[in-house]
Image (tube, rainbow, N blue to C red; front, side, top):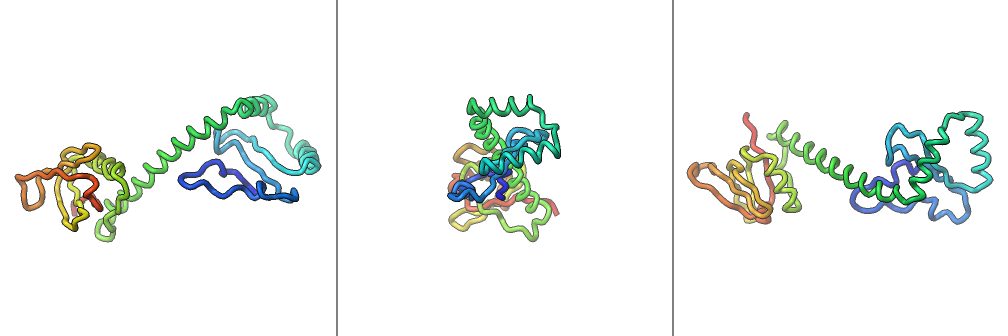
Length: 193
């Protein structure tokens, strides 16, 4: 038995195909649920198995629980038949991906803010991530490590898609710096001790 309860929800690289897709002899029973992709309260799923097994499982289901609403089953059937599930899944993946990215960014910042003595400066891979973190901390002190190896400590004054403007640099309170985002190797949010 293969449980594909969240096989449609993935981020980044596509997961391997289900075992059922490779099953030439019909030994694998593949089950799944609509509750993760449509809404949590939906108690409706599916089974992919040999027809004779499906018949036996249907009898067992009727004996154990006859409360699956035919109206809900019909609505989900028509929803899937019109290929609306595919479009819905794409929207859900985008939204869950956005929420996942926000959660991971929040966790990384929480580590920096709660345990700055132990935390390493995060490595930032792309300009969008650097920009979004700096925009979120506009007005706060940050330490930037440039790819050249230089460290700058200042207050985030402005951020554009390509540049960050630091004001009141440490040791040079009357000077500002404008740095290209691609020149930044790592950032750390400065905290009060």
